[in-house]
Image (cartoon, rainbow, N blue to C red):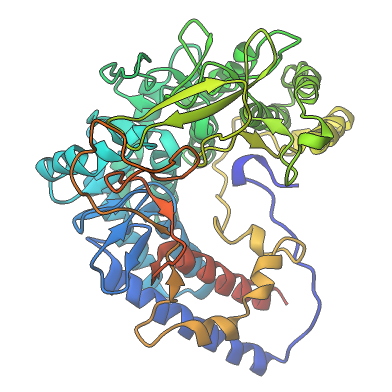
Length: 532
């Protein structure tokens, strides 16, 4: 069983065949050659000042993170620059080749260059400077209809989408690798950011320093609210645990972890609606965020928080984290759709009205950010296409985990306690690859053999990938009146909407995600060979 948030137990690799040493060495050389050719392209051709976006046109004429990026930009959100840093360290551990460590250092230097004075990060880093960033927000960002988090430039750092979290986890990991003192100031600055931004009750705002300047469509600025959405609290706990694990038993860090765990308890609602919302006001009332995220209880957030409570129990041995898990699971069962309304295994409406327990469904009208608007009702037809209105949740699996937790031997729990004072403990050797090296978890990697991946790598050193995600180039601000067309269920509006969407005729280009996944498969093959 994996310990909390990738910090834990090594998986045992099942052995199926035994190759001769000479054959294994030959296979490894071919694998490492493929890895090196692909990595040289990314480091020496695709990178901007050591950092990366998510995808690139084959001729580098356009590039994207979550949205279209300027050539001067790198992306912090996964799978961006910090993810690449983790991948390079995994490759370094698998090969011993210092080239990968140097690539990780370049990624780290890019992140440090974009680390804010407060210690956190924005979604992206623009080496073109503040004027370039503001120009991007005034054009591309402002016209992203569905991505409201990019419509306004707060100028602060964000915990959203794990960008700040993954950046600081990677920098900590790089520091621990050789204890190079040049990385410690950035790590300590990031730790200070997490500690300073935490509310006394234990949660975190989505953005910090707190600002309240982007109220629109009658809704308040949501970025100061206590946030569970996109696992803000869980990711920060992960980083704090890593710091506590490798930097020493700091009482401030331990207190922050305990308060963060406890915020899950105090924000759970009373039965019979014993779930959680995406965010909370400071007086602990569930509250919406973007205009298509209403004030409601949220089923997938509830399931995620239950899973966290089960992990917290394993970390601490404290049964208070189990006490109200059955209420939450019973509530999820109470909002499950009838069998005849379930499609593709999605049985749980995303949003549930507080008080009535009725599903809420999100719709939109208009054609762009200027004339468009979102609204909520009880009608499940014609819901927005970019935000799932119904979720697949494994409640039965959570019940099994709860039963296992109840039956757990306290002596076994004692072996996994991470909040006990003691000497520093090492981080896992691999961050992106460890799970995929288990014979029962790597089915996707089995389909991508090293030989297939070597053949697929083109002469330039990148894996040609259909870029399904694309966007309209900036074409000016949207019109005040809707243009012809039905945009109720599409991912993008009219031609002025800069939100990303899926193309029916994708062009072939360079994908950072494809590089990462293929490298994971190659590294996993090396690790399997090493363990035979």
